[in-house]
Image 1 (cartoon, one colour):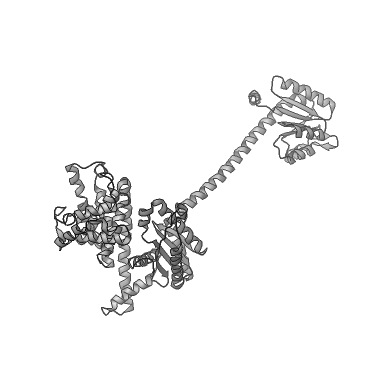
Image 2 (tube, one colour):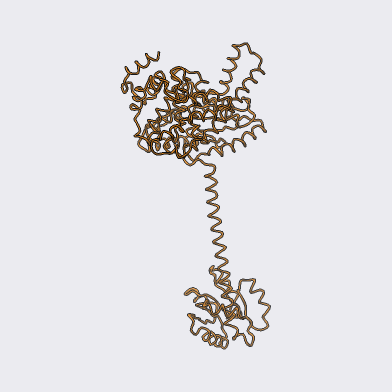
Length: 575
């Protein structure tokens, strides 16, 4: 009883009560009792004598609680309950029954009545407490119902967010294609399935040719637009069973279940030609045309035992397509034939020997590529700390490869120089950030500590046997052509050619992009003028000449924007 009094004194009570009672004596007693109870409260009640009249009032006004007799003219309290339920309104109903009708109680509660009262001799006295108790329980039940509905709604919202997060976890933000992580999961599933059921699976690795020049010429927004539109095209052109993903940067990968070399090559050639016909970035009021290079590997035609091998073979075929002139399709099968033809020149004819030799070569290259990819993560972590050098290593790598290609290097030597360019500053990982990120020039002591990064980089890479030539490039990339560089003061041709190439590429990119900590960024002609002026003293004139030729071929430089006679003089002295 004390708990009820506490609840009743809280001020939570029904503001409008509808009483349905046809017996005038009972109605009079109920009215007087409720008048006394409602005195001083913001509470009102009405008394009607039939179901029809109750429904009229119920439709005209809102009520917080209904108190109804069971026996009513022509109808019962159950029929009133049914009409209220049809209106889908949450209003508690209390059923009053005569003494002897207690058997209706269980039926009433099952039907939906909130409570019942037996019209005993003292029921009038108990009526206010019964109303308040029922209403309090109704409020608690409504609160629980709303909490339940809120929980359902929040769970639904959470499910939507989880689905969105799941999409984000497997999707590339820019293109909407599957991302690198999901590709590896999907690839593992597809390869396991094709191995088990013995059907072909092909992999296409697609790279946009000269994509850097798009960003340089039109800006990164245009570059992003090209990536998005190419992704949309690839998605629309493929079968539902195929998988297309952004592998990284400007590279895409397509998986083709139930497609061997013939089908994959046909599709790749169609894609290559279609891409040439598309005008990109028109929404930005631009008309950009691109070409793509495509490398293909295929199971079971190629000796593949896992999905990583298949990706590696496709990447190797793509590399051959790029170095072979770009805008072409290359099959890994064709790459292996080149090895076989080379082997025939030295009288090796045994098929098993050829396959074993090829496998050993591929395993070595896979290990090297895995190391390079892991090192890229370290370099990225280093560059993230210093926004001025973000992307510097990758740009030096690409530029070094272009110079080596212009100088007539073979494919293997081009790749060595490319790797040397990528890793040239890896020793800076060991340099203190207070020095590395200093916004102004170095003191003599700081410069001495900074200079050892080439030695530190050499020490990091040297233990890796298959990177021994890259290690030498790293060690000497700060030597000067006149012998005044560091760490060993090598001069002219004493400096490894790879180091001379990386030195020029490093200086060019620093002047073009990464030097804003010290001075304003230079244009391409201005940077070339600096390189020409320093040819024969700091830089190898032949390497500078090769860089100029590469830039002219790409359309980044015109022949009349530098002092040709000064470069010719440097070349003569170098000879």
